[in-house]
Image (cartoon, rainbow, N blue to C red; front, side, top):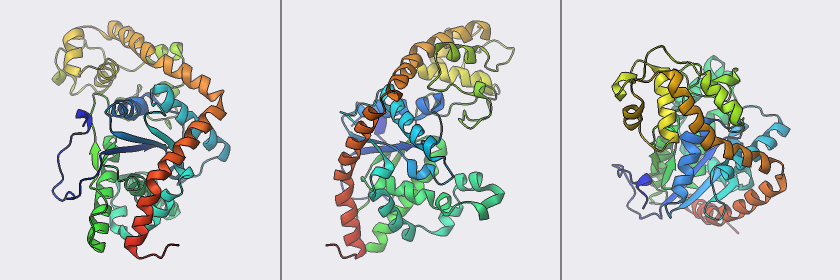
Length: 351
């Protein structure tokens, strides 16, 4: 097993030996950013090389919990698939597919809607953040989002899910749903999935405000690096990234009250496959006028080949559709028997 997914066993872990399997997905609800790449996709690529089966998904059913323009959703789904592939997801090594092409996701989600409790959903931080004061006007789908996420994971008996800190609560809810299902029906059928959270830049912050997460919804395009940005745009955004007047410290503790400095150093560490302490040993004492060009050169070297390949793929939508269509067929080979067994456990008559 890869070091990337060796985690502690949960206190209420299943006694069944489940085949190690990784699942994760990203919503196609807007352009990919550096945050998506460093916080998720690059780790997906690393896990792909572990020898463990990996499934990666464009979770378009999640995207429509808030209204999406249909043409934009189709384009964004293909762009996300292009981003996966350009970043190194190999369809010969990983199953890459579109969530809505595997109807078992929605079918298992309904079962889990009957298992999950209203109170569990109301405690979800993302529900509170997204619904805000307009909870009565939010869609039922947005409220039930975590049950669908649990179905995404447990439909494949996934044992590990690479996620950012902001999604850890949803994986914990997935474990609660699995445990309650197993208890209610007296089975040991669903695994206790482990979240995998690691890396120097699992949470990439805005280039304009180091206290806020880098987001595709930020009104300022200068706040983020888009994975479709060309080399000039990448370098320009880093040169203009907000910093402070002090030199870089020699040790990580010196970044504690410097969010913008910490963010840029984290990004450098992640792109260079290093750690913050090692980076600061090399650059400590330097001014940002010297460090930013170093970061810009590194980012261009790492990211511009991805944006170039994404652009090529987006000119070949049939190629993308063929890849994710084949992936959906492979995903269903795993999903269908697990859903059928779930129906049998629940007591549904099948032909």
